[in-house]
Image (cartoon, rainbow, N blue to C red; front, side, top):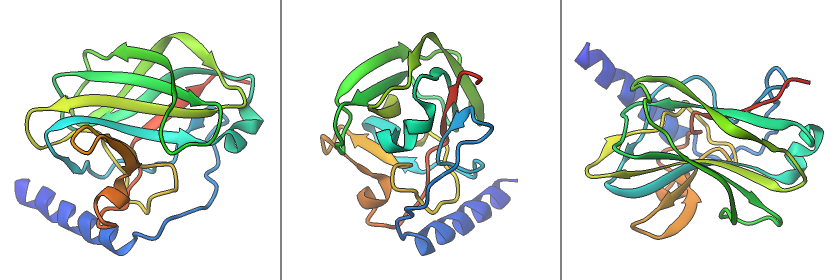
Length: 193
């Protein structure tokens, strides 16, 4: 089993390496309830020790059809559960390549490794005319695979990451010199119509 997993990861790495062109195609929202950029989970990239945030960003123009709806919960795939995991949701009044106003923050406990997890917000957040960032923040004592990802290629806003070491926000593919082109397995769940 271990050898098969290594083989699969090598294939995924090769696919990611070959598909590093930035995608700008609009992603339809599934079932009118899920907002996300990712496909099925295939792996999780190695993340170096230190403070990180893995995030997806929705520009206001992409959320226009969903204004007035409520963000009720967040689904995410965890490969390895870090010692601390915090959900952070931001909004931006204007377009920016880093989140600006923290709307919601909650320590997540009880996550299961190698599986999808759901966190229900204690108070839903209304979608308005602002940008929306959904982020998972964690600190690692050593290199680990934490937040799951699809096989890519990355969509424009599907792979944002904050690095405490570099103290900045960047697309993950940029941070890896276009060697890894993925989308984080992070999804927002909206209220029903």
